[in-house]
Image (cartoon, rainbow, N blue to C red; front, side, top):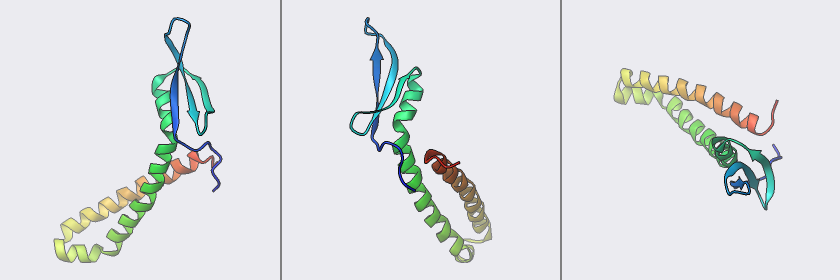
Length: 116
């Protein structure tokens, strides 16, 4: 899917009134491209500014997490033979939890990329 958003890194800059008090934050990305203006909550500004980094991390986790799950799935019987069935059952529980988390990661990536 083509990137339609401004590439990172993004940053948030404080907007100050004439007295020097912070009244909002502007979010900037790329080469001084305005992403969001006058964000009132500093936590929201920080989250917005971190969005490209978070997306990249999720994409990396999606790949490496899938590789780990595939390895565990493909070697489950070997694990059971070596470590015992109780340990192998815990591996299955971890695989299932990873699958649930993987679905959430996939949905978050799709949402971030504008999928409906």
